[in-house]
Image 1 (cartoon, rainbow over the protein chains, first blue to last red):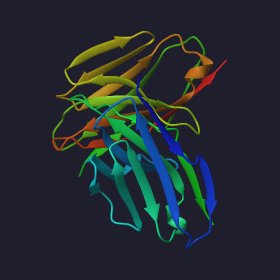
Image 2 (cartoon, chains in turn brown, cyan):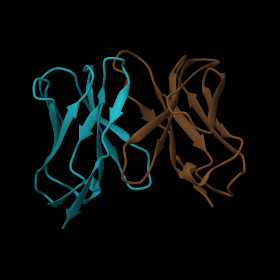
Image 3 (spheres, chains in turn blue, green):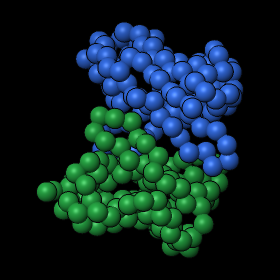
Image 4 (cartoon, helix red, strand yellow):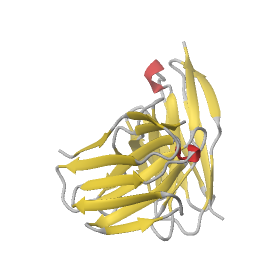
Length: 112
Length: 109
């Protein structure tokens, strides 16, 4: 069966520090991969999605970047965090025509 | 612009039935999803509707009317563990998911 893991689960970072969140998927090949951010009381905001290795589409201009170095690995990064980067970050994968998303456990980021 | 509307919060009693509504205005339609999200956790998939009508899955059912831009999630025989947020999402003509802000459902004993 397919599983998805992301880490770390929680982190507290100072403004201006770098960020790296990692996500891996097991049990499937060539998944579509996504990074979302969820702010309190708001809908999920798509940050990046990838249909294959090295193929990244950015939905929102910001100081975040994403990379897909391997088929089942998706990384979210920042060189310098802003206060507004605080939130709940979710990695997800999908396959097939219906395309329902399956989410990782989430990473709660607090920027101070 | 594209928009998904759902109530912010609802309260219901254990053992009862509750209906959570979702209305949408999107550029095209390629399916509607409902997800459940417990506090502090990731969303989990509940249901998918692409044709008009009712899809039943155990205690949960989801209804879609494409002509009205309307869906609802029906939860029967409510249990305390059903306390969660319920997210409605629509896939538009570009196959991008548009998300509602979610409905927080509070179950009282």
